[in-house]
Amino acid sequence: MSRYVGRENLRKRLEPLEGGPGRSLYRDGLARFELPDATLTVRPPFPLAHEAEYAVVHVEPLLAALAEDRLVGALLVRLGGYAVGVFDGETLVASKVGRRYVHGRHRAGGSSAGRFRRRRDEQAKALVEEAAATAVRVLDPYRDRLDALALGGDRFAVRQALAARRELASLETIALPRFFAVPEPRQRVLERLAYELYASEVTE
Image 1 (cartoon, rainbow, N blue to C red):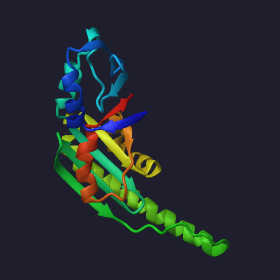
Image 2 (tube, rainbow, N blue to C red):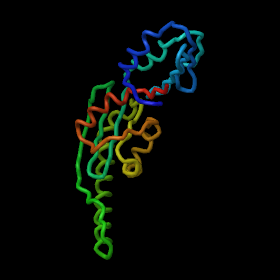
Image 3 (cartoon, one colour):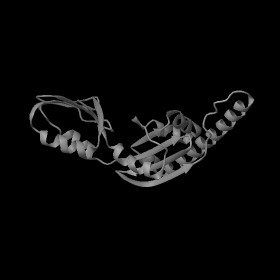
Image 4 (tube, one colour):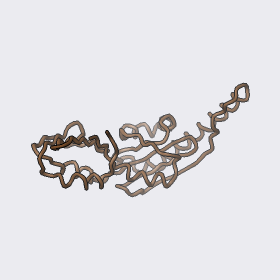
């Protein structure tokens, strides 16, 4: 069973295990702890550079990596809105949120459905282009210092936004593996992302 655990909660859980009986394996960006009664695998949000094997439970390399603050950009897009931000650690240091109305799907058929669909496509395209332009403005001052880019919202809309501006292509190469499922992008949703950025996937 896998779940995401915030770094402070994970620290509280793992810290007491340091030096205890078991085995620890750091490899391929993961940490695996074989405890007397369970096996715990932790995939940190940012891949671990540390690689080693220990004949005891040794959590300190993982906890040290989790405690490190990063400079992370964020791009959240859904049809109806977008949010762009930059986090220094868990502090949101730059942000811009926007909304643009996009019609829902039309259930009826006929020529009116075709017109409705074209109108909806135009609205969606305008939103994606606005989100992309905003992402460039917000992220560009930090471009050379960003450690990672967090993506979330609707996968198709995010892919379209990244493709809309060539300035975003290089940032896509530092995208985090985790895609963040978020509701309608708002300022408060963006602010809550700070916690999720440092949550690790824990499998027991």
